[in-house]
Image 1 (cartoon, helix red, strand yellow):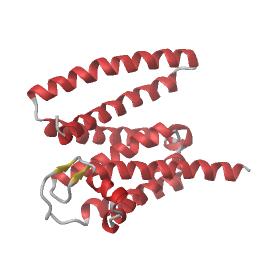
Image 2: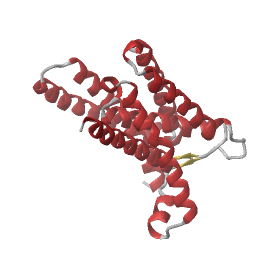
Image 3: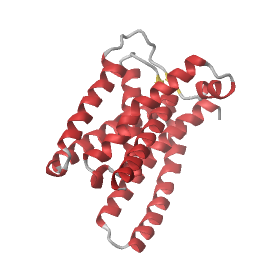
Length: 227
C-alpha cells in the first residue's frame, strides 16, 4: 500500500473516530456514574473497531478510496456543523450573546478568506502527503513555514471562542478538537469541489493544531481571571 492510499484510510478513520468521540461525549452528558462511563467507553471503542476495520477492508475492495474519503469528510463535517448550529439555537438563552456574534463574524471572515475570495484557477485534487511539513522540518522553507503558520493562526480564535460561547456545552477539549476537524474538513472539501483550492491534509492538521492552541489559551485566560 503506497503512502497516498494509506492517508485516505487514515482520513476515513479520523472521521469515524470523530463520530465515536461525539457519541462518547453524549454518553458523558447523560451518565452520572464515572464507572458506567468507563464501562460504556470500553464497549464503544470495541464496537468502533469492529465497525471500522471491516468497513475499511470493504472500501479497499469495491470503492475508490479517494471518493469515499472525500464523501465521508464532506458529509460528516457538514452534518456536524448543522448539529452544532442546532445546539446553539436550542441553548440560546444560556449562550454568551456577545461571544456568539464575535464567533459568527469570525466565521464569515474565515469563509471569505478560504472560499469566497478565491477564483477557480485550481485543479480538483487531493493532497494527502506531508511534504510541506517535511520541508519545514528539514529545509526550513520560508514559504511553507508561512503557509503553515497562517493556517495555524487562522484557527486559534475558533478554539478560544467556542468555550466563550457556552463553556458547559462547548468548553471541552474533545469538543474543540472535533469541531475544528469538521470545520477544516468542510473548508478543504469545498475548495476541492468548486476548484478554488486543493483539499490538503496538511491544512487540516495545521488548522486543528491552531484550534488546540486557542483552547489552551482560553484555559490559561480563565485561570488568570480567577486568580
